Each structure stands twice: as C-alpha cells, then as structure tokens.
Amino acid sequence: MSVIFNRVGAALLGLSVIAIASPASAQELNGANTAWILTSTALVLFMTLPGLALFYGGLVQAKNVLSVLMHCFAIACMASILWMGVVYSLAFDEGNAWIGGLGKVMLSGVSFDSMSGDIPESVFFMFQMTFAIITPALIVGAYVERIKFSSMMMISVLWMIFVYAPVCHWVWGGGWLAEMGVMDFAGGLVVHATAGTSALVIVKILGARQGYPKHLHPPHSPGMTMIGAAMLWVGWFGFNAGSALAADGSAGMAMTVTHISAATASLVWIAIEWMKFGKPSLIGVVTGMVAGLATITPASGFVGPIGGLCIGLLGGFICYGAVGFVKSKMNLDDSLDVFAVHGVGGIIGTIAAAFFALESLGGVGLGDGVTVTDQMTVQVIGVVATIAWSAIATLIIVYITKAICGLRVSDDEAEEGLDLSYHGERDYNF
Image (cartoon, rainbow, N blue to C red; front, side, top):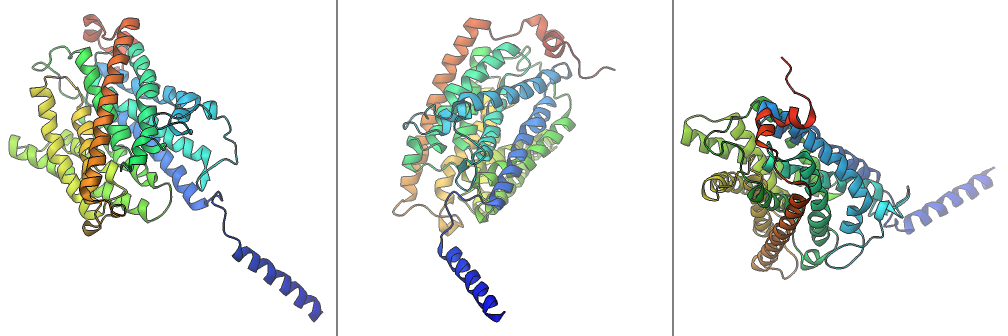
C-alpha cells in the first residue's frame, strides 16, 4: 500500500512541476479582468441610458424633453447595430495606419473562444461599443429643440463611419497616432474632441434656436438634470477605470483621479458662479462635474492624485470660460455646451497628460528618452489632426444630409414642440 501511495505522490508531484514550469498562455482567460470589463460595460451604457438622456432632457423645455430622450435611445440602438456591422471592424481590425480592415464585419471570426488579450473578444467588443454609443449621443446636446429626427439619425450614422471609426483606429486600433505614442487613455480625442468639434460644425450650419440668445426658456427640470449627472458620474468609473482593460492598480488609480477631478471642477464652477452672481446653481455644479470628468478622461490612466486635482482645476476654469466664449464671442447656439465642456475638456486633458504623467508628479512616467516637450508635441499633433478631420468630415456629412432630407424643423413644429410634432407624445399629461 505504501508503494502505491509513493507512486501516486510522485505522479502528482510530477504534474505539479509540469504545471509550474509551463508558462500561462497569453490568451488564457483572466476571470477577474473579464468580470471587471463586463461591469464596466454596463456602467458605460448606463452613462447614456439613462444618464446622458436625463441630463440633457432636464435642460430643455418641457415640450421637447421626449425628443431628447428619443434621440439618445435611438442612437444607442442604431450605434449598436452599426458597430456590429462595420464600425468595429474599421476601428479595430488590422488595416493600415488610417483605417482598419473589413475582416471583422458582422463580427466575422469572433466566436465564444475568441480572445482580446486575456478577456473574451465579445466582451472587448461590447465595452468599446458603449463608447461608440455615447459619443454621437453627446452631440445631441448641441442641436436640441430644432433638428429633424431623420436628419439626426442620418448624421449620426455617417458620423460613426467617417469620423468615429477612423479616429478610434488612429488612437486605439494601432493607427498612426498610436505609433507616434499619443496618450489618450479613455477618449479625450476619440470621444470628446471629435464630438465637441462636430457639435460646433453642426450648429453653425443648423442655426440657432428661436429667440436665441435673449428669449430662451430656462431648463424645465434642473432636478432631472442632476439625476442624470449623478448617473454619469457613477458610470464614468467604468468609462475611465474600465479602459485599463484589467482589474489592477491602473484601474484603481484611474477611478481615483476621475473622482478627484470631477469633485474639484464642480467646486471651481460654483465658486465662479457664487462670485459672479451671488448664488451657486445646481446646473452649475453638475456642469462643472461633467467638465472635470471630460478633462481627466484622456489622462486618467497616466496621472496620480495631484494630477487629478490640477486637471480638475484646469477643467473647471477653462471650460467655464469656454461656455461664454462660444455663446458671446462666436455667437453659436451650442445649446447644452457640448464643445465648451466636452470638446475643450478633452483637448485640455489630452495636452495636460504629457506634463502630469511625470513620475515626479505621481504619474506613470513617460517613455524612455521621451521628454515633456516630445510628448507634448505628439499630443498637440493628435489634437490638431482630430479637430481637423472631425470638422471637415462633419461639414461634408451635414451638407449631404441637408441636401437629402433637410435639417431644421419648421417654425410651427418648433413652436408646438418636437415631442408632439415628431413623436406624437407628451411627457407631462396634467
């Protein structure tokens, strides 16, 4: 009997030695990372539905609130199918420096066992899809209360293919900006700079709302906006910390600096309001929060707590100034301040990442031999290229849409409200 036990023990010992000696496959599924990205995917979708929808919905007139909710919901559905059909492939399939290939059209080749790093590719696909959903939805805030529903859908479809897909590939899909070493952890360029720039182009062609700027109605429900903003804040943890694609220290620090930046920018915003107008507003504090979140997004995986605090300060002050500049100096009716908050925030955060990533400031550090000037140059090139491409492509898209189905609702439809004139419903029936 002892001989049998000895042989069994020797066999088990041999198996354990083989297991220890064999390195884990690079494609072996990591359960912890997979669970975190599944959770992050739900959080980022939560940002759009219902977070962004409620945030925007509370800021418009009561007769237009359903139209805003409808825009966000319809974009979520459209973007999901379009992402599966072709945009995911254009963004992440192997192609060239400018655009991905068509090898993953309709998720061709993606099976239950397909891996992206150490998580299932289906999970990576879903996580990135939620980014593709919220980005065109952000632009909704620029043209609320005056755009045709059909025009909104057509612009969003073309925009995802010709703006979002290429820039996503440049930065995250191994394109030319990735090869240069651009730092955009969670979407300062891919999400915020593209959406903000395109928002300005659209409103320039579309024109202002009736009564702009002197006879506009105040937000019909600041409380609804605050509820949506709170959902955005929570969801943003998935947006930024999830972009680490792992349940590790990078995700933890990204979550930490995200929260610090949001809180800081909120306080900056209401401090400015308090000094200027004598009263801090609820709309102000939540707008400051979004500015802080947008500004930290590109830097969130590269900076430490001090960077999060400083970037929140920058986001609060600069985005506040940008709101007045767009409306007063540029005379553009970017209704819910998409460019001033998201566009400017994403741009500032992208550039600031080069400095606050320094190890001496608590960041992860720059590459070997890379100076702050070197990295700053790359960041500025990324910003300029993203703005230029987004503006030119959006200009073409909007004029094509205008030629096919027009852009603006009629004055009578605007007066009645888009809820009834375009959707046959009313949000408040009392």
